[in-house]
Length: 336
Image 1 (cartoon, rainbow, N blue to C red):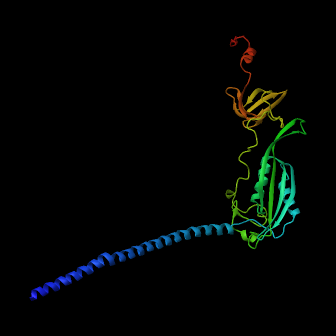
Image 2 (image 1 turned 135 degrees about the horizontal axis):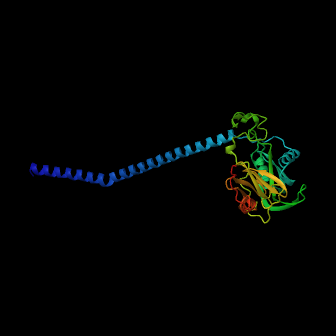
């Protein structure tokens, strides 16, 4: 065989070996490496997502922690080491000194826990809604750590006799029952203490002192609920009977407008008595809203048990005044 034949065989053998190696690497080795790299990339992405989630969680937790620490440092509630039932009863009696027909308190329980102890009292009675609202506001927001639970309210209409006039008066009140918790013996640092709140807040531009902050919360008023109720949900919008004229105001149904003095005063006659009123002055069931000297009239707005009415009172200067003039026509006096 010639040298050319040997060369061809050698080249063919090399080509077969190279092609086989290429096929082996392409179809067997490279897919495994690609799969390994894809898994490594996926794992890296998962770890990156996990790190991102951890960073976001850390940021959120830091924000919550800052808020909690701020609230903790801003606490103003006092939890005394020792608390006696006479002190609690005296405190409740001071808060219910006015606006309550009766306030009955009964001891219910005394529980001593690991972090604090609790006295529980059951209270019931009758009061004006605004007075009861103020009592609960004081209980919940004063520095003494008290809490109201299981509050129930029912409307009652109490009819009493006025000692001065002898007339019956209807008083719209509420009957209530509640549980009152008083906390004591708190763990170390749980109670604010006077030294812990000194200088933290201001009230009306003045720093809170120990005397000023004895009971009232040393915090700005805008962070607390309203001290007075916006409305009384137990007071009827339209009453079955109107209240009596307890203060003896002018009754426009029985009075007569007799004169207007200047631009802001009107004189009325009621049962032989003259009374002078101006705009904004109260009358029975309402107030004077307008005095019109040009047209000799007065407007009075009345609230007739929830029904708003406007009454116009005029001076009797029409036909009766012209009748007083008579039919005689006067002529100028001629000079002699």
